[in-house]
Image 1 (cartoon, rainbow, N blue to C red):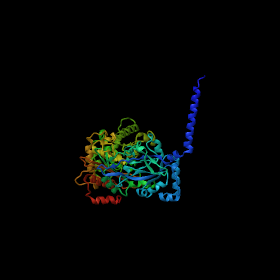
Image 2: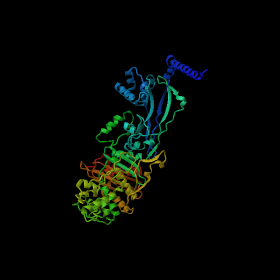
Image 3: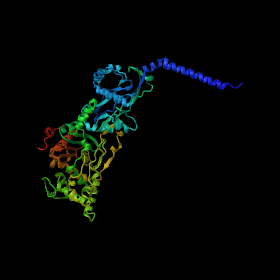
Image 4: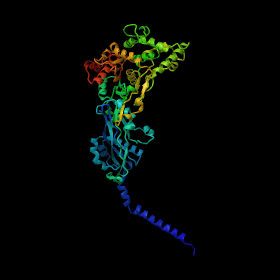
Length: 600
């Protein structure tokens, strides 16, 4: 008898297959209990968004905190709505918005949750929460929006908003999802990784009506969110608020720096805006309004506006000339107004007198000696070589390129080179008489207000600076701030040359800025009046104080305010007094600045 085992095995396999097929038929067709159980409970994956880190001023005062808001999330495949009119009335949206939001959610995914109605207030959430069970596929996700208790420093702090499709594409780590909020400007953007925290995930069971049936497997797979790191900024809130009060109704910038650290004490861009207007459900509407405003309140002037530095640049010219051995304290030139216009002052003047009286003809002649070095037999070549050597020295002062402040969109300004003039005028077709306006900080030279404040810090420090920055501590640890903000940058000028400069700047207040003189406190400063071909000149003033132990370096730039000794010097002097003394003892000067009638 032949071996029957293969036949038996085949019969066994056949019988088992028949049994399994019958069982599957019973489960899927005859018995619907499994389907009902699957339909009665579903697992929802809920992202637990962390709270962003808080932001404090240098003295521990709160600048930015979080307010809870609620997003209505939707799973399109599960969503059902009967009475459309009632739904729209309940959620305060139009029928068109309902259709648009639903279509957008389906386009993203029919089975994954996405934002349906954004940023519902606590009050509206309390009103609708009991009705959510009537709409399968909807659930609530708690988020937080930023709030600013003192409505100050909007340009420095920045704002957050919904992530764009472009930003999502650049997110190589895939941390963000559609509908997430990210920092879009200022510190919020620059320190996004520190402030954002870490997302968590919760899995919960819900029935077909969306009723929460508890955590899936007792939360075995849940992960907790981690709040963002708190940041202590370098901003002095009281000084910032005072400066904003003084600059209200004006156009310009104020930047104050602690010279010994590079910490930014105040950063004011006028006109400014209330940062609370760029939070919550009205963000888009308010942003469009601010962005379309002709006075450009969103434009961050301290780091983005570029101007000719005007007469404050004469200090740099003096230092470059001293270091190169071309100028000496006793170097004297006549105030020859046939060369360039000037105002009344003693004539002739040495270097000290030129700084004190801001003598334009002095620097016209001094700059010519710096540039025309007679290092070659070709006059043009001589000027070209001298200009490029001069430019190299000037750029060490942090001019002609970005400083590296912890904000995005910083501009670098411009210190012209021979290549620029070759392009404009042609090779060999320009000479000193073409570029002499650079001698007094005009012409093709452009700097930002931040760079001007940094110049004041260099003069205060006698030849070095720390890169200006807004970060002081991260989670209470000063060692976590970027290392580059603790590097001393030397400008290539011997410290001995700054003694004359500081003395002359202290005396300059009595010559060109007597409004800035403060009893019992020696301020060293320099006025500037930057030419403006489109209207009134711009008022500029840089200063540091106290002269012998500087604690603050400052620039004030007021557009269309005329002479630097009026608007800018007065504002800077008041802010110095506010920071160093805590109170204002010259109410008449404060009233003068607040009135803003500087031209008359």
